[in-house]
Image 1: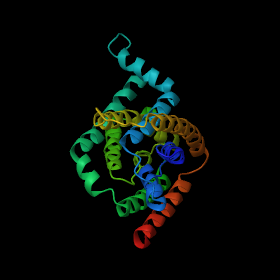
Image 2 (image 1 turned 180 degrees about the vertical axis):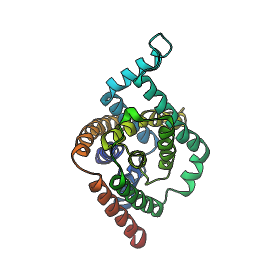
Image 3 (image 1 turned 120 degrees about the horizontal axis):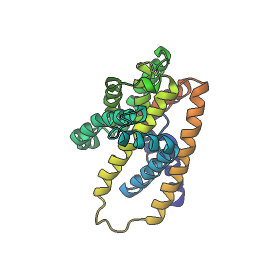
Length: 266
C-alpha cells in the first residue's frame, strides 16, 4: 500500500469507528472518488485491532472493575453493579453475534452498494436526531436492565448493514430508551469491545496461511487507527456532555446526499 493510503484509511477508521457517522460510508469514498485499490482484509483487521486496543485502554478501569465484579459473584460478596454490567454487555452482544453468523455472507454480497450506504446514512441519521430530541435523558447506566440491554443489542445487529454505524445505532437505541447522552455513549463503547474482538477473530481466521502480507503497512495502520480512536473517544465524550447529537445528524445528512449524488452522476 502507498504510505498516503495507509495514513488516510487508518485515520478514517480511527475517527469513524466510535463517532455515530458510519465508518463504511467514509471508507467507500477514497476508492470511489480517487480510484484507490482495495486495502485488503489484513489491513482492515489491523485497523480494527487498533481501535479495539484504544477502547480497551480508554475504559481499562471500567473493564477491570467489571472483571472483578463478575468473578466476585462466585464469592461471598455476590454480584455487584460492575459485575451486572458485564453480564448485560455479554447479553447485548448475543443478537449481533447470531445475526452475523446468519447474514454475514448475504450482506457482503447484496448490501455493500453505494446506494444502500447512502440511504442508511441518511435514514439512521434522522433516527439519531429524533431519538436525541425525544429522549428524556434521565436514565443512567446503573438503571440498565436486561430487557433494555437486549433492545440495544438487537439494534446493534442492524449495524451489519453498511452505512448504519454501530455506535450510531446503539446510541440511538439508548437515547430512545431515555438514557442520557454520556451513558448511552459509554454503554455503546463498552459494547463495541466484544463485537470488534469477535469480528476481527472471524476475519482473521481467513488469513491463516496467507502470503505476502504487508506487515509494515499493517503495523502503521493499526497504530494510527488506535491513537486516533483513543483521542476520538475522549473528545466525543466531552463534546456530548455540552452539546446535542445534532452536528452528527447534519453531517450524516450531508454525507448521505453526497453519496446519492455520486450514485446518480458518477
